[in-house]
Image 1 (cartoon, rainbow, N blue to C red):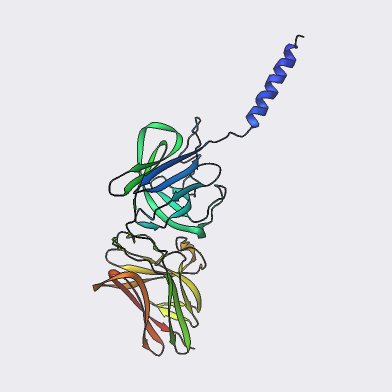
Image 2: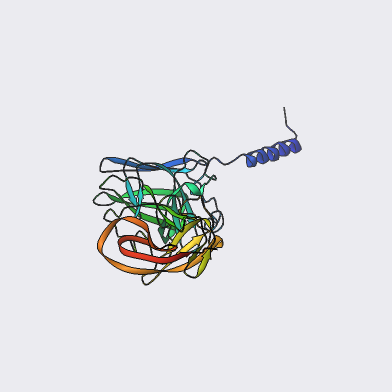
Length: 327
């Protein structure tokens, strides 16, 4: 039976339309490396360029990107890792990135099993800068690589289009224990002042100017944001801080540090919104003779209604005086 030409063309067009509406299946791929008998792997969706502009378009700048397709990209490690100077205890994590035209950051997030577009910044464990370079031959499909180095080290690479990103890592020689939570409080003029913070250890790493980089906002602790709670109004560095609870950050530099008092609370220490800053005040910086292994915050009483907030790590000490405003 001969099919009329018009009907044939109609069937062809309808078929093409139906096929065009079908979602493109993105394959799942993985990268794996065994270092010191410990397995490290990354599972991810591997989208293709397909003639599209990728960086700055399909992958927009200045927004968190799932760094793959489909289910969230997952890093699974049987070893404790030091990733770009950050401590990653063995386990499973989701990987995201934050791209800009000049700088990319890798985000290690504690939530797993979710769709790649679901991102909870409060679950962030680490954010580390990636080294970026341009490759001449375009990479058609997003590709993760784990390359072996020497002495229990390696390099994590992400490549797509003409962009190559890399980050060194190494298997930690000692067990990484999650930074414990600690607090310090003082009673002044019948009012309580409390600081709650995570206490990371140096563990042989370069801290000031290394793990704690200069000229960048630092969470001033570990894990959840460091908080200051006061039952009275405070005067710090000439600024009045109304009674309540605030997050504390710092901005380190080689010559001076700033203490940042921020109105947002309850977030991961890696989450910082400058529009919510209440105050930025200068800290006094001094060198220490004795080495401080674990980050420490203390409050020293000076008088009935005044004191000094102190921070210390490695061989650096920081301080700022404060006064309770009594009515």
